[in-house]
Amino acid sequence: METSIVGVGVGITDRFRTVVEEKIARIQTLASRAQRLDVKVTHRVYRNGHVPDETVELTLVSKGPVVRAEATDGDKFVALDLAVDKMSEQLRRAKEKKVDGRHHPRGAHFEKGSGALEGIDVKPASVDVLHAVATGSVPVQNDEEETYSPVVIRTKSFDAEWMSVEEAVDRMELVGHDFFLFVDASTDHPSVVYRRKGWDYGVIALSTQAPPAEALAS
Image (cartoon, rainbow, N blue to C red; front, side, top):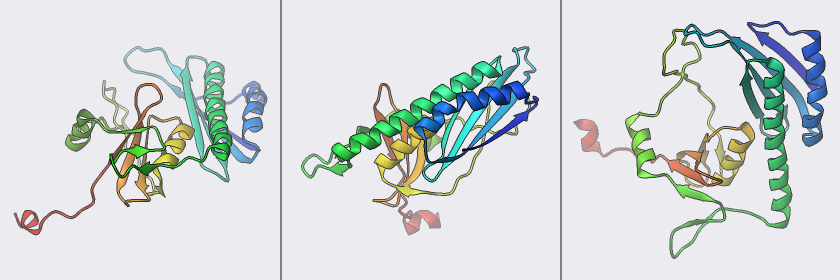
């Protein structure tokens, strides 16, 4: 597996490279088809007096979905350990799901009587979550914002991907996020799955129906 290590605001020593090669052996064991692992170390200095920290981001590229993990600590070696632990756990859970799926095929389906979504642990979004999305009160983040602010705003853009709700949940677990945006293959609606308390998940879907002509005219 090819390894790329870069530093932003910090130099990469030979010792750190050696430790990375030792640590990623766990990842190679769990992801035998991996092609490349990108390691990015970012040194941050804050203007408000906070102690500087180091963030280690891991991106695993293979023939399947991209897997990401990151961790922050005052010591980049500790941050590396935490990031490797996160990625190893994500890969281990994905591997267990794949094995379990061979013995117990999964699949989301609607019950005709109740209209409930069965076959996957997904719950509809709450009224509060829907209101937050509709009113735009969910904070957005911008990587290029340098001035200190208690609210960090970032913006990112990705190509749309069509998949099932179940596949979206799996992808969310692989990238280690609390939500995942996708287009529902069964409805063609932009949707998002998100993590709830415990191991529950929620899903929000946007209706793409055009507004009435009279609404456009007004």
